[in-house]
Image 1 (cartoon, rainbow, N blue to C red):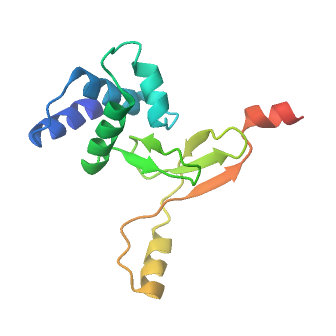
Image 2 (tube, rainbow, N blue to C red):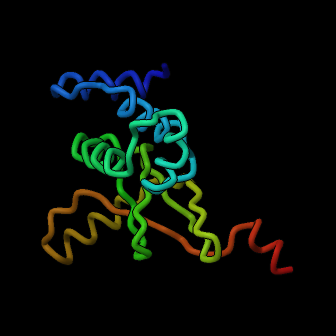
Length: 143
């Protein structure tokens, strides 16, 4: 088990959460995924291995992981939330054709947060940045 997964499991246990095989599988899938899966994608990937897994189980566990601060829910207005277990400062490039989401790193733009606080009086807790375009696979199909 990788360190990040072990730490997440220990955190959940310390909060009194019982680690069922399905819960562990969902968490492990999220932590290994680079694709920012939807709940349905997680269900389809894991259900062949867990006959008692339901879509509701996936959603309930995702909610638990979000509340525990282990996963972020990414909403982009298309009614299908995606989930990201990478909580580091990073940003997303999103394909307007296929919906692929790719992480990229850039120095955090904390000065934007400070400026937002100064101009609005809000106490800013963070920010999210997405850039939109066409991924290489979709661009090659257009050529």
